[in-house]
Image 1 (cartoon, helix red, strand yellow):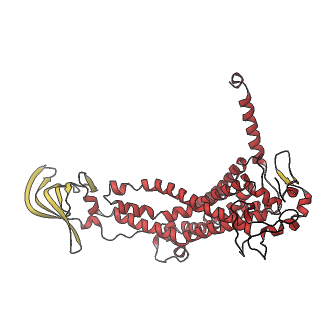
Image 2 (image 1 turned 90 degrees about the vertical axis):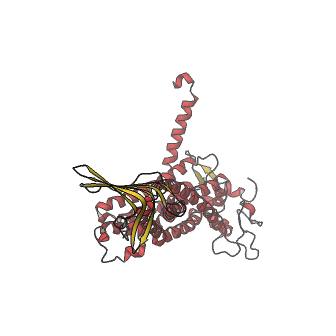
Image 3 (image 1 turned 120 degrees about the vertical axis):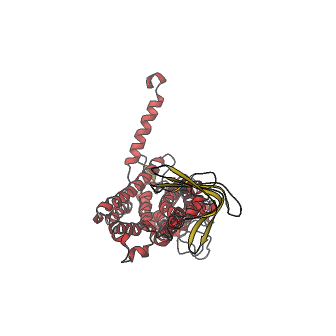
Length: 461
């Protein structure tokens, strides 16, 4: 590498494990050499001064795509890295949400196939779950974006240049924490109101659909069992809403079985009653146990569906379907909650803990992928270790919440898990320590596989 960074980069060395180290003389001069790299020249907002050894003046293009942000409150390189994370984060979140949404939508196809609903109702009901999915997947999308950005900075040697120019670990960590704050804000908006409100509306819609007997009836060519012993079938439904070729079998009574046959029919709302009016048909009445059959022809007959529709339906909302305000201010007349108070308290603590997760994940990811690395150092081991670390913390919090269902006193431990993980990662970062176990395991496995592959085919067999 040529240019003013050469003197600083000359102090870089590797230990036996391939870990990057910077010479002691560089550490003593870090503040002197690199302090102006992260601030801008007051006389020219598009230049950087004090880079490397001596003085360097030039455009911000020493890092490809670095913006000139004028008198911003966030230092220039922090803004550059944070912008890259926040650019990739929405894209990752969109892809993850679409994938999970498509799998959830397939489970609701019965609304169209068996409940006779339109695709508009199906689409609206499935879209109401998107805020909840986005809130749930936002920390995962943030982890993916952060890993991709820091790995890209290492791949292009940008982190090496930043570190050699005076950037400490906390300086390189700061952009990730700013991006984690944006992710936490999105999660907070979701858990406070948007996500539970969407789930609550979806619950009410789903309850109304299942209670809509009229819609269940109007499904041509199928035998629909409205309830036990009551089956209806129609041949066709015309554009004006009338029904053709109607059959209605009522065997709910043990003493008599009724079968209605009609050429046409129509569902009518009259005086707060729901009636199925059949015309030009017959009624077959079978008496039991004598098995005496009688047939009566009619010009018009009204079958009452009011009792089947059940009138207005009251929906009991689950803990995840209630906003944070509703969780904090319970209704004293809510018997559903009174019977499940422990579950509601667990849900409340989970809501309060979710916005903290992105900050903990940022510390864990940075611990494994945030340090400058040269090209000959393997980065895949760090990426895998970061993913496993985040998964371990998420599993621990989720397991704590599951255990809290049976023992509510365990619910506050979710904050202990997050705080412990953050404290361990932050301590290692602050003391300039690194975890190398995953790299040694990766190198050992890679060496073993390379040795096996290098053997002749007969020896491998």
